[in-house]
Length: 350
Image (spheres, rainbow, N blue to C red):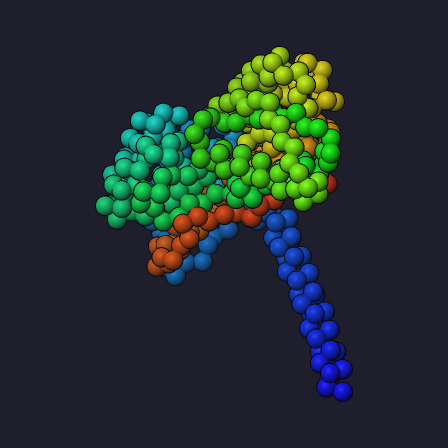
């Protein structure tokens, strides 16, 4: 009887474990699917034990020449001011020397927290040390910085996980069919682009090993776009001449490939080439995913959510929190035709 009783209890425990695992998965899914809803509420005040009135948040962007940077700045400003704080911004104007000078100016103005999106992972190390010497905590956002820098945490999307989701989707889509891949990257040496690329390749190879038992990864060429529409178009034009057999384009960012679409269309190859992006969830890319078959998927890199998180972490620091992880990720999320309508906002900046 004890044996039978034990077996019944064991079965009940297994059923309960499965149930709670399912609930957990649903909750994680709901967290990911609610990313847009969360970002739409980014202006809500954050609970603080101290009076934030008059506290100054300084933010330095590498540039404002792209919708992503504009949306990120707006999110930081909205969340700063909704919490009664003063927002100070500085523009690096796509020049590393100007960004260093801009950060130094924010330090001189005595900000209570410095949010920094570094154009270069090495060149901004010195100003983080200057900020620390002035008693100003530094939060790195969106991009990355050399580990020798003095900063509290890096706040960004999970570039490796997002890239892996996109690569896995691509491998499943093609199965045993031969892929002749062109890779469109941002610029050489960029740490975020490198991580997204690693994620894409990891996702492809892991899925092939899991389902096929071997790896068939043929990247015909890699070209840099300087994270621009014009750069993507020019790179794709050159690729189509040198490698007319390309049937897949993988890219580190939507912006790298949006210009490439024009070159693909002009060559009459929209039915022959599939595009997969490791990031960002830009509204133009989501629209292509919804309305066409040649843009397969992208992954969410929400500037609104990153801006919200950055201000929240700065407020937590002001309230005495010190145990931050060195990297703080937003939830990874793949956007495909099946769920694109949930995340498409035609009125969004980005």
